[in-house]
Each structure stands twice: as structure tokens, then as C-alpha cells.
Amino acid sequence: MGSGRHLKPIEVYLGVPYATPPTGSNRFSPTRTAAPWDGIRLADRHGPVCPQKLPDIRNETAALERMPRGRLEYLKRLLPFLKNQSEDCLYLNIYAPLQGKIICSDLSLSRHRQQLEFSRGASNLSNI
Image (cartoon, rainbow, N blue to C red; front, side):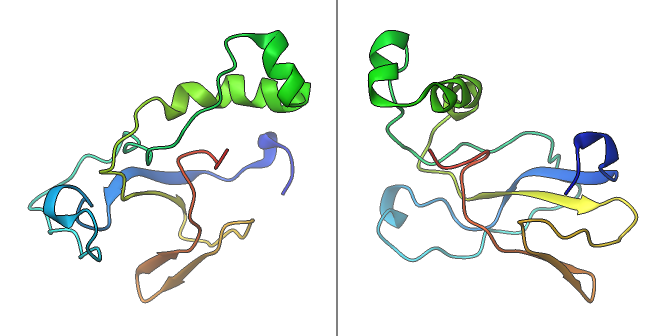
């Protein structure tokens, strides 16, 4: 994959539910398929990320004793995207080629009879 200047146009669908929320009586149960919705569903916002303990990087000097500077700089950029946490976090962010062509990268995307399959598990941006 080259630099960002050569990326192809894509369609982006954010926060698409793929299972019932694992909350309340569903907390320790197997997930079930999400209920279908009627009409058009707006898919322009990330869903919540699953709960996780985020590293404290407010004190940069102390943080640098526990991690390299590159990791600290990465976390500074990443942490704002991980603030919205919830057990109701079973959502997909789907990135599909605009022209229907499949572009392979480290994600595994494939099209089968108008069905898009996605296989990679992670939070919105990355596991930390």
C-alpha cells in the first residue's frame, strides 16, 4: 500500500450494528443477530468502543518511563477516539471501494454475490 496520495475512493459506513448489545440480561450470553431496521439507517458515526483501561499519559515524563516516545505520540493521537466506551460496542465500520473493486490491504475484504465480508477484530482505530 502506497502513500495516502494514491488511495482509491471508498464508501464508508460507520457504526453498523452486527449483534445484540451484550448488556443487561444479555451480558454473559452468546450474541444474537441485530434486529433489522426499517428504511435508511444513517451510518456516519463510529459506534462506542469496548471498555478498556486506557494508559494515563497526562504526565509525559512519567509516561516516558513506561514507554518509548513513539508510543506516547501515537497514544496522544489515538486516545481522543477511545473516550466513548460502552459495553454496547458490537458495531462494524465498513470501508468498501467506491467502484465495486476489491482493494486488498491488511484487512480481508471480499465480495460474494453482493455480500461484503469483513474479518478483523479491533477497536475503532487499534488495540492499545
